Image: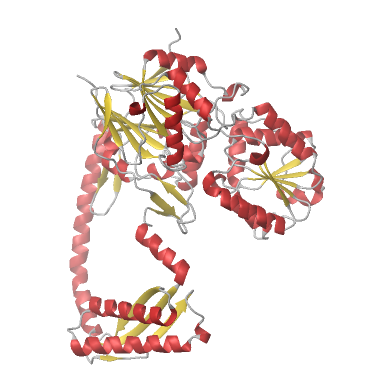
Length: 631
């Protein structure tokens, strides 16, 4: 029977970050990466954005595993939120898995370590209908891998973030022999990184960047504050080397960088010179010319931390005259404005700014020429540009056409698209859930478009609050309305507006008592509408209007008696629910212990009357790991 093959765009298309893709072969789905993206200025108050978790609610029982290409947030950042509710196996290289565990433990300390499986470029995993294998790629941290899903129709290759750099060191080197081996099998579809497709300049080689950083450090006599991403291991290594060569001690400011550096050191991926790291208490005892401060910020984004340093709001460091702030990362297009604003604040505080990206072309992503070389090497039948904004996907398509591909075999997709292979051609089929899930504090997905719209209005025109107490039985207002505002007008200079609003409230309530059958919803709606019209007429602004109507309770005693009478009945109901729930839990527990539950389901989630959840993880004993055959 012919395999049914689908490719799903779950995130990372027409946007910067939030990479997640699915390959379905028959009844098994293989998820490739599970990343996040950082919000732009329009998402007020949002911390991060992850892919739509509804996908796992709908298709979780088919997910065989999540396969990671590398340890940056755009590839692993959504894992903490997925693994909160779904026990899905996670596969990645040794360093990638350790970084994933750090991310998960940061948000979810209850995560099961048994879900994580370490693989490498010589690993093949046999599932029911496919074989998953891996190949080494060059990126800004070691042990980055591409993924090859082998099907009856051919290979489906996902590159993850990659670039070509012949000068890369051993742990960062692309495996060209493996690429050639995959090409000989026949590549059905290539999902390839588009982030840097518009670049016409080749990336500078690693030795040149190392020399540049060393020269920057040598030519500055004061303190140096380096802003970099914590997970950019190659950059962190270059900073340590240059610091040692210029006799500087290094102070790590954040917990994230401390944990990542420690992990990379323990695993042998990071060589830290002896006695180079210092504590914060040692800064006062060391001359400025011998100090280097490595700032990575929370979750690897250092710009906000730099702003705090420049405005004396950082808990330990204040930028002062003579400080050099060296931004050692190439910012994405979405944060270029923020970089400019940060630089301006730093100069105001007396520091100076130097950016690596201004003098050197350094990126962890493939240039246009690299993408064409990959296409020429793999010779894919179909190309699906991924990991990039829309213009980058289009540029990638044009590059592929220049390299000899048929334009009809290149698919520009959007999040939610699902491509079905039929008669050796991909067609759009029913979409999959792919809306943004927004994380605000500890809330996951509880902030939607309506909340964001209210936040936007609040940021523009503020809020107007009107509180009034009424006696519905006597049809009168018990106390004078109380009106207050924040971010709308200055109250002390706007007595006429406040008094007028109070009159509007009285008139609206009187009209409801006199001319309508009393209805709470209708009363509040009338108050909202009339106040909104009045405020706009007086000020030309549209604040968020929040009417609060309270009632004098005439039946308090009778309500209390009724509640007491119902307590015993409610208690009996609760005991019954508990008994039923415990019975269900015991049944599921026995099934798990006997091992009778089918291993074809990756996730099962049971909900009972008291909302408790039982999660049964996938039994992967039928998955075999073995070294890749070498011809």
